[in-house]
Image 1 (cartoon, helix red, strand yellow):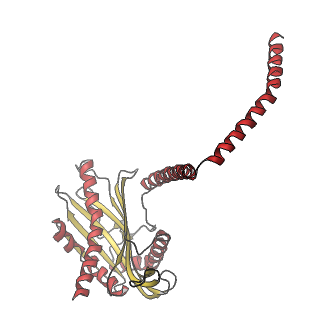
Image 2 (cartoon, one colour; image 1 turned 90 degrees about the horizontal axis):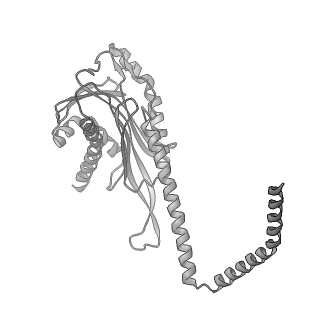
Image 3 (tube, one colour; image 1 turned 90 degrees about the vertical axis):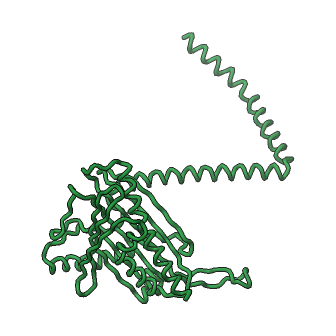
Length: 337
């Protein structure tokens, strides 16, 4: 009872003080408004700038958190490009060809859709490059690379596409010349040239061999309304062969590298200032190459350290740069003649 009485008296006392407190709050509000009205413009601008900096800082932190979530999601994926076919090639030549022809149209369609979504909010007139590497939950060393390379020069998308195919089908020569790594390639191309199979064998600086088995699909449209805005559009889709009865993998002797890649060539139009009147805009047309590569170096029982595995996947991931740079340099040299 005593406690109840004491609490009741405290409440009554506070209730009596409440009107005075409310009057004091009103006085403080009035004083704050008066001070604010006399604040000069410089102080107001400083306050605005401080708020803007705080907002920008919170946005940067939010973006960093989003990037962290995306990085975690990426590192948990076994395959990051949209090809979901398990490619099993039999020993019979006709069956091998038919297997590849059956998946060709779907792979090219998925490749076009993926690149359209990946570049939906990008300015294709500006060069850009992204690279991330990680170890998957199964212990594979992976690298993901995305590149946009606009080209300067008077040439068509078809010229660029043909040059890209030429260097792509001679990668072993470029790699050997540029890096000193011995690279051998065995090609298997059906008569109709609709698909191409490439098996690579590379030597690493530490003396191990890396094998890969890739299937390549190519297609070029002189006019593509859905993905090229009615202009030229070329696409190359590359995926790894999961199982090959004619050429089985040798995991006890060699490292296995899987490559999944999409390369596109398209004509891109954008507005630029006129040379003689910067206030006016004119339309510039240029050819843009883009690629998305996913490299996977399979977990191995061979005696390689983590550092050696990471160095190997890094070297493999950088070879895509060699391809695009060779195409650009070749076209620049040809146009300069």
